[in-house]
Length: 614
Image (cartoon, rainbow, N blue to C red):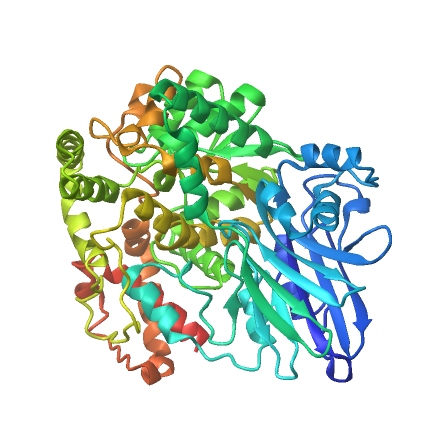
C-alpha cells in the first residue's frame, strides 16, 4: 500500500519537481512513509518520471522498493495496493521459467504483466492502481482495479504532457486549470454520491481513471491517449448466474462459506501485524470470527464504548469476550478543541467533500490503529451492497416481484419489509428525510441559500425494467461503494494504514450479487445466507439484531462545538462563495435555523468545502 505519481513531459519544457521536498511527494507521503524514490527516463522528445512513496507490508526489505525495474531494465513500475494471490501467481510464473529476486507482490505484478500482458489483470485478486512503462515501445499504461478501491487521477498539462497521482490535490496543483467542477459538487450535494459516476472530480481538469479501466499513453509519433475497460461486473455476474443454475441452497451456502473464509485468509498475508475493525454488525463480526480462527492473536478496533448503549461497544464486547479478542475502544473526548482537531484532520485526509461525521469517527479509528503500531486493518465494507443488507433492497425486490407476478416471492418479501419497518419504526422520520434521494429530487430542498443543481438527474431507484441484480451492480459501481471506498482509502492512508476489505473480494462480489433474492432477503433480514451460515458461531444478539447502528456521532459532535466552529468559519469567508449564487448570513445558517433540520448539518460540511477550495 503506497502512493504513486508520475508525469510525461516534453523534455524542453519539463519542470515538475519530484524531489523529496516537492508537493508531488508531500501529497502522497502519508500513504507511504517508509521510503520514497523516483526515476526519470527519456524517450525521443519526452521525459517520463515515475515516483513512489512506500508503505512496507509485504517483503520489508529494500529489494522491493519502487520504482521497480524488470531484470532487463525494459519495464519500470510503480504500484499502489496489494495482489493477495501473489504467492500462487509467483509459483505459476516460476513454472514457466521466470526467476524472482524478491519476496514481494510488486515483482509478481510486473512479471505477470510481462508474461500475460493486460490479461494478467483478470488473474489478480487484489486492490491496485499502478503505472507500468515500456521503454522499448515508449508506452505507459495506467491501470485501476475492478472496483476502484485504490485511487488514480490524472490531468493533461498545458505543454501537451500528462501528470498522474494517488492525490487529487497534487494533480490539481500541477494542472493548468484549478476551476471547481460544480456539476460534480452539486451532484454530490443533492444525491450524496460523489464518486463512481463518470471520471470527473471536484476540479474540471482533474479526471479519475475509472474503476476497471486501463489508460494507454503511446509516445510514438506524438502523445496518444486511449482508454479501455478491462472489467465489467454485470457480465461477470451473468457468468456466475449460469454457473449457479441447478445448485441447491445448501450447495450455495458451502460456496459462500469457502469464499468468505478465503477472502479473509488471503488478506491476512502480511509481514507486519494485522488487526480487524469491529462494528457490532454482521459483516465485521464474521470477518473477525474467521480472522481469529486463522490468526489467534488478532486484535480489534471499534468506535464506541461498552457502557454506552447507543454505541456499538456493547455488542462488540459481547462478541470479543466470547472469542477472547482484545478490543481497543475509541471515542472522541467531549471537548470542542479535540472535536475540531478531529474534523480538521479528516478534512485534510479526504481532499474532497464528505457528508456525515461518521467519517470523522472512522478517521479516529485509523489514528488509534496507528498509535497501537498496526499497519493493516481488515474492514467490513461492501457486505450490505453485495448481500442486500440495505432497506432499499427490500422495497426494490418487492416492486420487481409484484411486477413479474411472483406471488409467493412477493408475499415473503412483503413480510420481510413489514417486519423490518416494525423494528425500525423509531427511525421512520430519518428515512423520510432521505426520501427525495430516491425520487430524483434534492435531499436539500429545505435549503434556500444553496441553489446549484446538477446537469442531469440520477436514477436512484431505477426504471421498471431494472432487476435487483441491476440495482446491486449499480450500488457497487455507482451509488454507494465508490464514495464509501474513497472515505475509507483517504482516512486509512492519512494515518499510513492499509485497509483490506474481504467483502470486496471480486469472487465474493460476483457470487453474492448472483444469488437468488430470497437467499439474501428473508424473514425481515437482509444478508440472510450469511446469517444462516454463521448462526452457530456469532452471538444471536448481533446476527439477528434488527437495529442498524453505525457511528452515531454527527449530531453529538455538532452540538458539542463543531456546528458553531463551522458557522463562524463560513460567515467569516462568505464572500468567497458568492460567485456560486450562495448567499449565507447569520440568520439563515444560525443554530436556531439549523437545529430542527438534520440534513442541514451536511449543508455546513458542503459550504465549508466550497469556502476552503474557492
